[in-house]
Image (cartoon, rainbow, N blue to C red; front, side, top):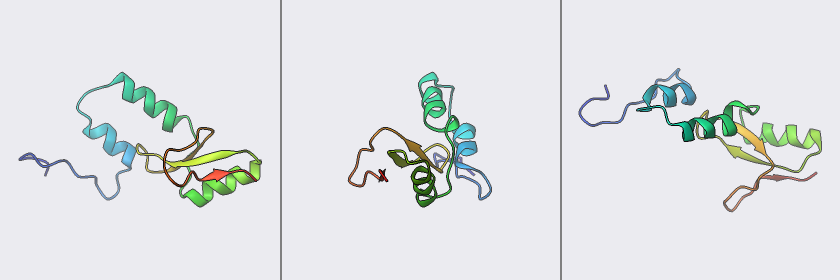
Length: 90
């Protein structure tokens, strides 16, 4: 139960995206645009290794990132901020 000031919890069978939609307080156009750009318009991969393998097969210089909205991995042309860029340059 999420009452008494405690944050709601994600169900065992609930995807991160479903949890995000269920628990957000109101529609936010900026967040909706970010979700569309960052997640729903891209192919999801179950692991970083799977995303890297697909990028290597296509011979493209791409970066991997873990999506905070859907909990999957995606590919992007933009460099990641952080120490391990996850670059694919084969």
